[in-house]
Image (cartoon, rainbow, N blue to C red; front, side):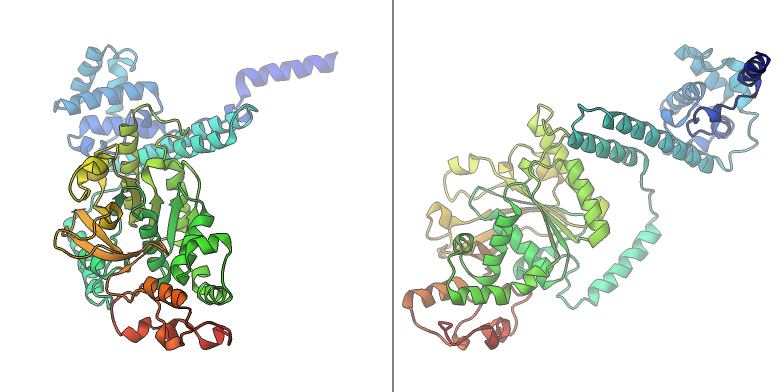
Length: 524
């Protein structure tokens, strides 16, 4: 019994005097002394508030009294009133928070905590870091709690966790402003690089279409490019051509997010574009022996192309941003293609916020923000409204036809419309030119350059866009099969996109196929 009493007494002594709170739990990250120093510095130095106003917010302070004092300081700052011990005390009294803030004596004591405001910015940044740590702990604890619940949907939890973590970074990690001297110096360096560039002064990701690249200089970093058209105009085919040309011809890693078509369907289209074999034959597996030999000989560089395809349906902007960040970190992607914008969700749960126009506005702003954050061009496809079909004349699209939100037009750096008069059974355009196999790439908005219309060739059989002055592969393919004649190598030419219209021999069939790729039975 004596031993038991001794144990009890020792426990009582420990509970009353020797207990360390850290033995039973952890205190949130905080720096009370620095909080007092920052508040004191702001009250004794007139310009101190300007150094910390964009770093700190009310929640950056851990102590409740300090939050109330900071709130009073902000009120004075917004009203352009002087900030000192007396004005802060009076503002607290007006707010009815003077006693809750510790009283006049406590506020006065803060000015004695520091001699000058020389290091106030550094102190403020430490407080901001402590606040971020607290937010991370709070978010992580919430995730851990929900993860133990059997009723929690794991994918919804992943989206929620990603959204919360992203909001911490978005709300607290802000870029500093840059002085004009450093910006001019950086621009001069990039200008020298562009002047020494041997690719016709393209300083962005090349599209592979000569006239389009002359108008844009290539797709520029941080730009949001909207490609819009009515259904069946070839939006997916056009953006696949852009991705193919960037990845294969210029070795630029490209990410494609397809919300409409599966990755297998996109690959079938790419193979058709690359081999000039109709996609329906590839889909059905109905290939002639010589077609299969062409396919196997042409597919190697497509297999090795730095193209990354994600066909997650109804992806939300937070998941998209996260995946693009990982692709940028792991593969240094240079361009993102999204097919298409209206199929995206602006919320984590995918249920929308009730107002579709506001949701589309949020999506377009997020895509523009992602382009700036990653420093790469983002190409997003968009549908056009039915107003195009009801309009008379040639039914050429205009900016007001963008569907569901005017924010798309506002956020985009470039807006491109695809238009094929042949689709509307118009044999000639306004100038009397034939429209067969012609697709117009209309640059309707260009924030940093001219607006113009670029004519391209569209081969419906292969769902492929090409430069207008290239040799027609579609016609050659049909001629060979309809006539049934066997042709020699030198009389069959391929129409794979080239960077520039140069030596015609570079487009010849011999340059793209090796004789050993074919046997004696090949019908040429």
